[in-house]
Structures are given as structure tokens and as C-alpha cells.
Length: 68
Image 1: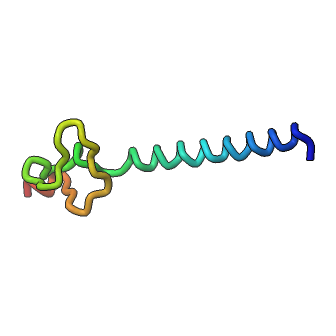
Image 2 (image 1 turned 90 degrees about the vertical axis):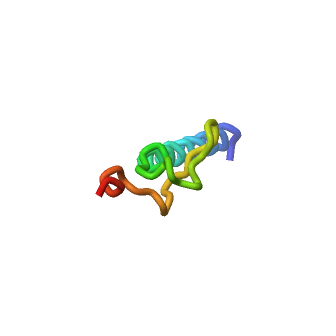
């Protein structure tokens, strides 16, 4: 296998990896998080300013669930 073939194979591997990471990022962005939670003011697990929010939290409730 020539150097050119190895480089093309490595490039293809990197492009597939980048594509997988982009799909993962889009999927994570669609999850519910603390910013869309209806109980964030009362939640003990809510992040402080500057901390990362929780995604797909089992305690998450929509605004309409809280007001009912």
C-alpha cells in the first residue's frame, strides 16, 4: 500500500469520525435540559451560573406539567 493510499484511508476515517460527532452534537442539542425545565427554581440539581446544564434529566418537567 502506497503512502498516498494510506493517507486517503486516514482522511476517509477522519471524515467519518467528524460526521459521527456532528450527528451526536445535533442529537444532544435536541434533548431537554435545565434551561427548558419548569422546576429549575426549585431543583436541587440545577447548575450554578457558569456550570454545565444537565441533559436528559429524569427530574425534568415541562412548564405545562408544573402549572397543572
